[in-house]
Amino acid sequence: LADLSKTAADFRKLSAQGAEQLCNALTAHLRPLLDQFVEISYEFDGNDAVDASGGAPHWAHALLVAFASNFSWLQSYLTPALYDAVIHSAVDKLAARMEAAVAQKRFTQLGGLQLERDVRSLVVGLSDLSSRSVREKFARLQQTATVLGLESADEAAELVNDGAVGAWRLSALDVRQALSQRVEFTVAALKLH
Image: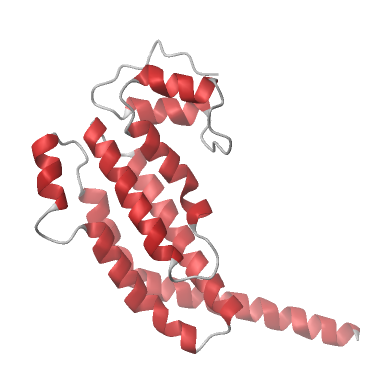
């Protein structure tokens, strides 16, 4: 019985390693779209926002299409649990890359609102590919986008200090960092608990 348990554990480990290698190989196909996200500017005014929503397909839609075409075919070949593990591993990598890119950007209020729409669109689209929710994986990014879209720095202080959000993932330092990315704000005197 002990040998069977060890063999089962070895097979689970091999399966997890294979799933991770598969995920890495397929995620590499998304790199050009993620690089495009890194280059996108979220410093725009009302006229830019109108241009960004019309005309050419938006990068979030293009990313969802690429993600679906690279991963959805696996569903026929993998067990449901393994398929979800591959999808969620890829979503983890996607969210981490986006968080790192967002931390390097500057935003206007309209840019913050656009980022919030982009993240929401990704969450909805990626949730359709998995039986488990992906919302949790984008929680920090969604909350950062919310802070970036606020009208004033004081509004962010009220949000954080009053504990208005139950499952708030951002620390006061994270909120201060996000606010410092807004081109209109000066956050030096802002008091966050």
